[in-house]
Image (cartoon, rainbow, N blue to C red; front, side, top):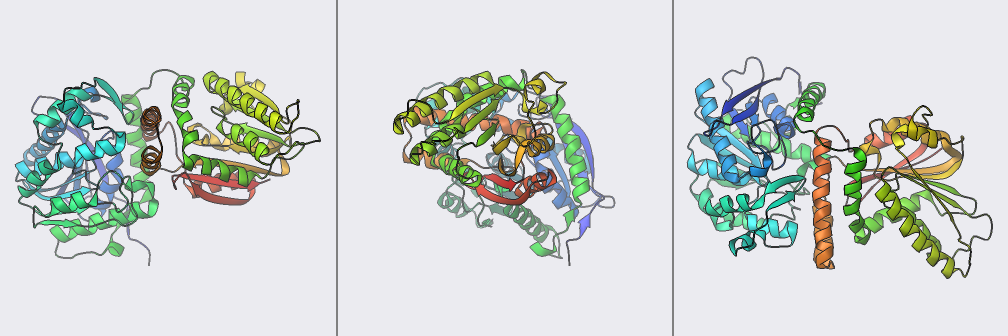
Length: 563
């Protein structure tokens, strides 16, 4: 028997003032006939908008609740103010403003308050000071901000601020924040220590449901247990197998939604439901509302500059990846799926970036001590950014010289060709770049398209052209980061095992760049694909014997096929 689907959910946008008169923009999600249903207030996660809470909200509404989800002021989203000025106090004030709105508009004096990650500090403080919160729910809640920031940045930023260091404006996961303002308010308001959260939790006179992730690298389970001991009304519901970004795994994300619904139902209704009995929102209704809110976000947050500018900056931060063990294993997987480079092979690296896979190819030839006495293979790298292409050429020339020296051959054992072009225009002779990208049918033996398709407007169009230019029997490998990918484990392993100070800073820069990419993904500019989506795209383009693998710490999907 399948899940019961709910398709009559209505989302109404509203707004109300906070104590400073700033406009808080929110959605009220309801079903017809549920006018007396209990309210759940959902706060946004740091750096995200109310749109990110849409699935959670619709699951709750499908099971008898009304939901208000809002954007913090001075934060990413539609509410007033710049994220530059964000503080945790601002978030607490927004929660109170939302409770005032519900009491004023609906006569509601009791709510469940639900928060995740860093926003849990906001929710805990609000629940400890406002008795209208009758149930607190926290998903992967941060309980020791100082510790979490040390794990993320390998530096005690809070301690540094207390000791007199000033940071100015920093890019924190894709968003610029005045860190001196943030830390001043955080320290003054006593949010930053474990004992601060212990104190706040102990003062909450309501049930507390805490959902920690078993594989969370940012939050220690022992800290959560310390907090739980301060209030007998606090219950823990561990999400086994989950990372801090619970959504990175579809199964754990689904399980966490069902767990939260089941626990909330038990607090409010006599007829409890098991996780298997949870009703689910109709996907068409959910996706339709998601598109509406995504389009609104696009109009709010406009990125300046071109894609060339954006990726030129990103690739500059990407080079640290070549020093990460997980990335080397990813390159090994891509290379293994393509098969050995043989004499006469013509290999297309579609979206070569700063040349890391090309270096892998050349290094692999060195490892095989392969002089390739016949006709030399050809490597063609295509890249949009001039800075990325310049770096790729430099890397490849260095590696090719090592190859020539290794096989004692004055002549290079592989021909290298490059083109700067936009792969969106591949095969379109009417476009500027398309005129460059004109290739005969069946002219390539191997094609790799690494971590590129997510950033194209029409990835299926490119795949159809790649199918046309690939030899019958030729191999193609494509890849994409997973939806809601979580790079925390890879990042932690790299910086804790062998990274120098400069490499740690480079890794931080990469984490910030990844945050900026996720912002653009959130607005629909980019799309990260699941394994099923990539498989369908390859098969739909005519490829056969399609296989899918997980890589990059299980945060990327790699799919291979044959023409």
